[in-house]
Image (tube, rainbow over all chains, first blue to last red; front, side, top):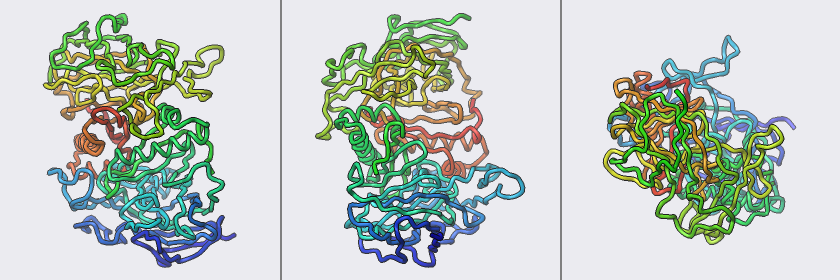
Length: 310
Length: 310
């Protein structure tokens, strides 16, 4: 099967709604290349382009893509093969009213810094972005990725059980993200990529950049899952990580740990208490982002202790 | 200089107060071995020993140890050379009213699971602890470590700017922790070690265990520091991490990120806004613990971007 390309020009959404209409329909197992704009739709090209307030439309997510046979209760697997940068610069910005240190008198907002992409030229070095004379390795992140939600609608600024603006560094090439399917066809969309991002995304952005993303989509029948997946789950090289978003980090930690307890209990025949005790010994809670309208954490379970729940 | 041993029988505290009296006084550069009890003072030896409620005295910290020449405004460096397990079992427990999932109807409290120490015997394998038939690598953590605070007193259940119950996995052999000195002699004390602990310490404990800790203490003059250290800072093999505790994870994240901004600004001559933008591109926020009366996070800054501030 040849790789199919879906561009932001084919369609992009700024809101995940239950009634999304697909720009394309693909079979499970289809290899896709998804082209995404930067989260600010190209509005920031130089350091004099500043963003005064969060735009009404932000984090354009290319899609949605219907996957044949995906029914509510199933799981959508999105294997991310690669995230390639598609422009020569990223941008990291402050916006008044947004970010972890918003309101700190020494933090100026708005400000834009352009982070040029280097290092893909003469020598064999890994690509980097530059911030002044500092070089940061390119480690791309898909900031917004999700499916049509069950009942509520969520703008692409918000993360929730359908995914959305998860801003999770593990959502990158080499990893697979699993989503609950709430609507027929699942309706996958993604965008808002970064060339690099710290866990936390403290100022409110990473180095926002356009990309081409290679993914393969798969549908897992509800009957083949060891647990009822209620929220996104990411598989990395060495861990499984339930991802949870909530009003506070504490509430998100509770959800992510509860999901980890369910996975460990199903795998080992533990009751929930033993699974909880075991979850406190290895891996653990990680911060995804602390700046969006809901905040996001994950609970890493090393693969030594958990096989695929699907 | 021969290594000096200080045992919990020499002295241990359950509260960090401004007016601590030293059990011993040592010169900067002294190599110490500090013997610690488990956080529950040996009360839990089998799975039938359960803890109904948090004891009034918990997390005994061996010490305090005065360091000659340490004056308020200085920095105390504690190089942790090794943390060795000093008994054949750890214990991981739930306590009613404590822990991330406290109140969840499927979580039983109190419960105790004993985690025997294995793997240090015939073969060359790394030591592990056992939980049922699962083996977890021994990766010790010093849960409680700190100095006499400035004005308030804090029980050894509470983390704050003086350190205390930080429950931070990076506080382990091979790393160095730096504390602000608030009182003459600094008054170092530590205990509450774990054979292994997840980031988050979700159930409220790791595998609590007695240890012998090798450390070397050092005093850094305020005039030799690039920043005014207000809170603990840990140096790992690859990062510097300010550690902050507060009522909420969000508030702790703000403090830790603010400290990271100060360190990056001092190193690179950035203004605070550029340091903040840069901090959002690499490393990032990490969860230490989400269960103590104040919660704790850290902000990792890779060493490529930060030299020693001392």
